[in-house]
Length: 263
Image (cartoon, rainbow, N blue to C red):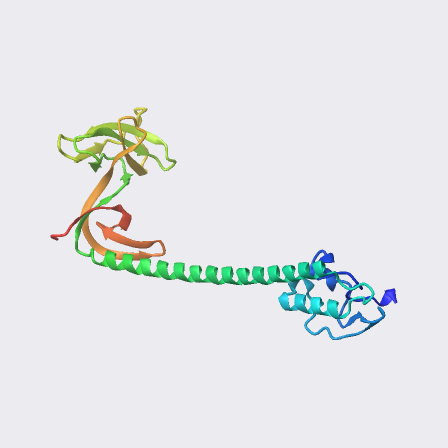
């Protein structure tokens, strides 16, 4: 009769298996169980059992297995009460874990929906704010210049009135090609500066686009920025957010330094 063994072993508890899938791994169907009277293998009712995907057994399958085990236990060696209680505890733990898993998935879905709505609302708010700037006189941070062989005029705004520091001109590789010392007048935060196109090695810079940084006297921290004044002539909407069109150039909203509300 051993060759006909299919699903459950007489006297062996559910907890004796390494995992639920072991209970069905030796059977292509779960329609044969041990007889409750003499251990002879016979057909029985195992509604709810599934052998096609044992790894996906749920709490109902577990309960069906437990009930079937009790119905077909060896009458000469019935299941020990402590073992039965242990199996009930496993069943309760399984049910709790599944409930927690379902709740966490629902929470995750809700959070994703919430974040999506927040992103949409935030974009709408930013776009509305950008539109309100049309026709306004503004000041924006502008850290790029184009050198074409002639001196380049810049406007500098210091973080502190009357402060001193350096203008650092960097090439496209991020290397500093020139340091020039600057100083704002007492009580003033803005000044004008002209880069003559000469590098620190006394060579003429090549034509191209350069980045400008305003550093403190130690040349390690930002002490201000270069800027541009102008009127917001238009708003350009891109995948990266709204852009202000000023003097033909595009600027992000975060570059705003000043807005003339009288304009």
